[in-house]
Length: 276
Image: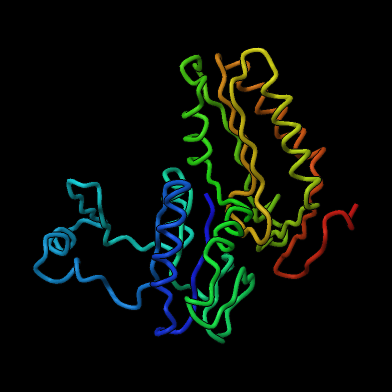
């Protein structure tokens, strides 16, 4: 799933850009949108059904309508939580707001926003929407374990599959109770080469007898303690082929793909390749 954020002042035309991008991206795949609200949505006001559900004890409520639209209220959720929920069902998500996030951004006007900035324009009319859409397609995708499993489940060969095996690697805060706590890791990849190596590993695994489809994904940038780093997903005819391919996939990814890891603890920070 490709994700981009549109940011700017309240009267900068952010919604106009979100509409233009959603319309154009919908020609290429399924699009979701997220808006940064500064107040609670009107659907959850006193006396409404969902508010009454919550007053009765429900921690989270959903509203569904016949044409497939829906809303949710009640549960505390971060932007990352919402993106993870959208990932299995969408090819693109356009976020309106969150100028301080680490998402790639289309910035309107001269407002200061956090990096990275994909495009900056004085107004919506100054944007080349076609060029922006192409730039969105070139971004590092946002994947979750659920989205990768959904991807292999839609494989043309899924009717021959009797197993899906997965591996998830995550950031551990400590190896031992007495260790200094790791707050986060930061990953950089050797552009081009890393993707080529990953593609070669996938091709080799998919060439095995009984292995039908494979997905590999390793996050880059900052990954906090407790968050997922890397996924391997294998669709196979039987469990043994699936388990072996998953194990070999993660071993080869760690050995062969050029990824550089900085570890940040409560006391220090260092690149792992600089330490024995």
